[in-house]
Length: 252
Image (cartoon, rainbow, N blue to C red):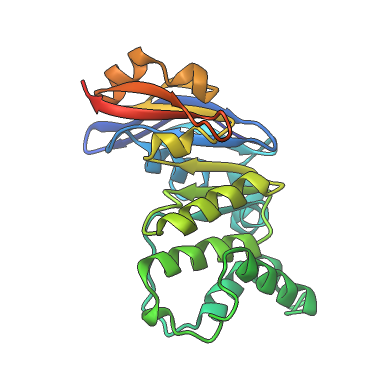
């Protein structure tokens, strides 16, 4: 679905992303993890076509991003940044309606189908009833949910989320993670919480701009990697309700 080959990005002589090769499989939830400054957000922006690599190439459904053009990419892939603001005077519904922009032109004006996509996206993110609220009046968590709703209104095949639980209270963190697991989409999301990352199908681990591990969470998050990459020790516990693994961390 989405792949990067030998991706490298330099800033001020430093390699922010250094020779990363990564292929995202159709239908999977891929978690991108690593300490602060490891290159997660930059790699996501390279894969989404928001940054151009100094070296390497990104392909989407087998085609280079440049061959698809911005509209072609936006019809296939939606990106939600960790932080995103606007100075425009928008309502919540206005903001989510922006997700339909790649599908609109003179031959395809706004339609009842577009309206239905927006309404459905608002409902999925528990934002029904917020449509008339002014953007400036929203909390950080509410804005984050609107951003994700906008991305879903875009009806992408690939959803990319940079720290999607940022600013959210615990109920809405769980709601978003459960929603991601249910969506019939390919999902790539950067996460800090390693217990949340355990929900992913695979994890890609970044360290100092390089991809140092890739695989299922139980395989990737071993003692050596946690110590080397994150500087912690972990005790593995089992949830008595569902048998899922829980990591409890201590300093190294």
